[in-house]
Image (cartoon, rainbow, N blue to C red; front, side):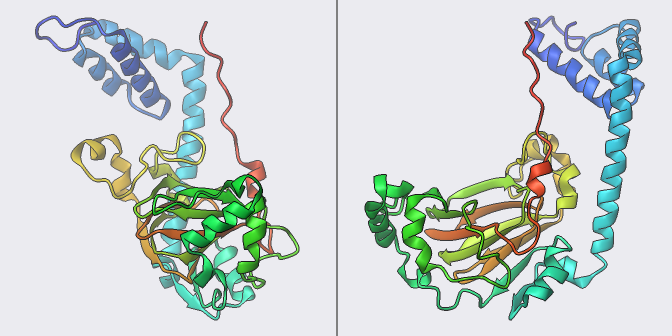
Length: 321
């Protein structure tokens, strides 16, 4: 099968395989037979052969069952889009609120249980870390911890995550205040993380299967968020990441590759030192450090936060022999 009707071109088995995979995926997700036949003909397949290939595919049990599964997914996509449309009827949902003097009860009622983000103000006043956590200080703490404690803090090139179960965190935890309105302080925050980010450090678009509080201790971070209900638009085919790793990147080739991104409602905030961002479970987030920054992420909430235990893991597929 040679592409087009012009001069003969070298046979590219890989390109043909990708074409057939694209056509198969299109048929799985409800694509029409005529469009698939036209695509094959554009690559040089005779009309009768193109029709035979497509009709054979449509009668394959895997394709038949796959189309049923895809219909179920499209129904879920419809439900998610409808729910977010209803959410947008509330002024609270049209922006990311910034709240001071937020009680634990209000936080639970308005944000945690409704899976909506919020920036919390005034809860980090008096934290020693706000003034103490310079790179030299963190570097000294690393020197005191066994084996350096996992901290790298030299010059302005620092960029590392430090698990709150690491030895170095034990030396630093006294500099953090308690967030007892929101967190269960009887549960060690071992699943949290401290992050030191160099200026300009970029964290690609992703989500987490649990709720998180991100406390900005030093530096500023520009953050973009997208609602959990936008997952059908965000090219999430594996794990918790997006193939379109940056909502800001806009060029014609990218727009052709990820056309659904144009439908995403992105929320942008700048998180300043002393501010805390609640990132709800399954909300999409990307970030860029505007300065050398330090943040702490907590997951030990007072309320259930174990949704990750039921997160579906992609099954491994044996390699063809």
